[in-house]
Image 1 (tube, rainbow, N blue to C red):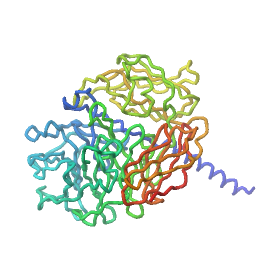
Image 2: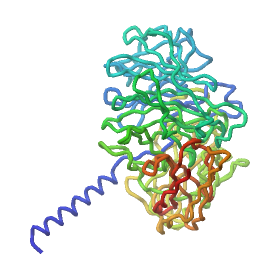
Image 3: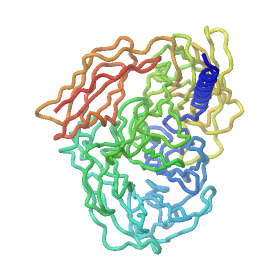
Image 4: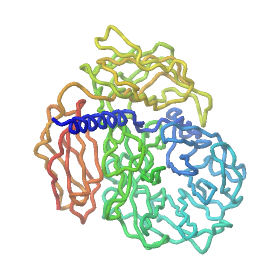
Length: 585
């Protein structure tokens, strides 16, 4: 072999090694986002138990930093990297414009030049519109003392020509509205106009109910947001109800900022009805520092109250045909954050699989019916609770075999919490150990000296670890008992990934064309399945995750459109190849 060939091979090998090392060092995140969420401020919402709650997020890139506002947090967060968040305490609602106890409910943000604007929801005419040129600290002043639009669930938008618009509405009988406002005085220009409304008789996903099986209530349209892309206006909305796992975001497209708008056939564009934490509605679409689009939205718990919720975000974008999409597949597993421009039609999923789904668990104690295996059942609605919050309470999970561990997510549950509203200066402390044999334990994660509030703590290990057993030991709880809705261990097992799923069948009724029934041959080596669907075979942008069964009732179809489906199986070791696409007319 010639020397030049040898040198070329060495260079290729070194480049591949460096690229692999860079990939391993990329930052990752895991939904729900690990934010120091405040607790509900409403006593009547806490009658079944005090709990953390927020929803209706907006994300804005302003002067090189990300700003996240959401409902009733008595402040907001900012970040340099979308991973590490800093909370700024701020009470925006003034005594004379308080709205039923809300503190900046379902806020809207807008960047105008060197200024960031924010306003919450109101139907009053005396609400304050705030402005700041340095929102990394509590440095705000009134841009408008009496904002006369009176908008609930507002979304604000500045067009390329400098004109400013507001969109709003939250109702199961009324549409969304739009209105122009003066860029300098913030006074309304002309009357509000009807923009869009739901059509659940045609769009199955818009029907109210946990499985879009409404029998008693009309669906809600809410959560306006506007983006402009290549001269088109994308008016986004949430539906059909924040309590449901199918809570998602849809979009209408128009040529002008106040319409008329046409319903995008590929809807909902943000949808996550399965997995650990469900729901992907009432959110915002934004671009990061590299120009990549993302979509942030509400995820549901809805156990102690219907409005017990969290926040997650997903890679998003516009395809070559101008279709707005977001990718929620494996959306509560670890994903890479962007470190440059990227194609979000390609997944950011790390490939780190859940290693302890429904695996054996041992605990130090159990409170009532809050059983140990609730911490590993992949359902944020259920949780294990120890009898106390004492130092030394513990949970041990058996992965079943020695596996490679890349990351761990600790999801606390609010059992017997005592806080209301925003509590500052509170923190969690714990230790996590690993073991190959269940007898000899090695420290894996040490949070014994940390003083951060981390309700959904996510830890990407600097170096992957080999272990079969993981043990978490409580040191300090901010309030309530030591309780976990999910101790989730991510990495790769040592076995084989599942084979391709066989015999996928999709049955669509003639009498109810919004509904379908999917069935497939059980895969003995599968933990669960991911179903992809769409209205074109090359645009299967939406997905549903299913654990522990080989069927799925999907009631979210448009009555008059054909649909296409694929399915793949997954387990601790990886993901199978997808099946061929199945079409149903």
